Image (cartoon, rainbow, N blue to C red):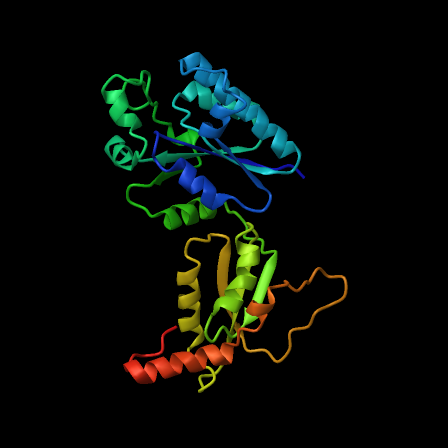
Length: 285
């Protein structure tokens, strides 16, 4: 099964690399312009010809990875239409996403000071200053994302919805999460921090002294904790009596340090309740 390439392009500091990192999944490779410039393409300069060669090589790498079954997220300025046409010829399954941000916004984000150097003439041929960026035609792109007016999370969601990406979880964690504590987080993070697609399934338990938070309140708390993890989703499920583990069907138990395994959810709740009595604050975490 072959993979596909999502090619993010736009002005320097428009948000390409930030969004690319948020789109990376378990079988995805990120090809970044800065990285390739320092490795495979370190022999190239910044003339239009060398920039085109830089992109031709990157497209060749992307196609090779696709043929091996890997998906690719590529983030390159790619300022010329002719370059984007070349990439479309080289990569069998490619979608172009235009990351659009005004040059003044890109300058504000530029922690390296490249725009300032370009305006002073210290950098020549800088895209957006003294080198052109050719705006794409509508039929050339799958989507235009405006990062000046949309958050990173909204932009990633927009890209996933447009390309109809399927969230394919490899880990499902089922629990009451009353509340979510360090023991829970260690288990979930063992998958989430390694790029696995994770679903946290929240049992819709009835309110009681033991279960003081509604399922929706717990969901909002968990989503707040994992707001920077686009590979983590939450869902509310009916309360269950049993979670069965079958033979040879891929289920596994994550091993955790002994000190983490000893963390008690009941004890955590009791400590919160004591704190609530002392402070008079509502129990929210």
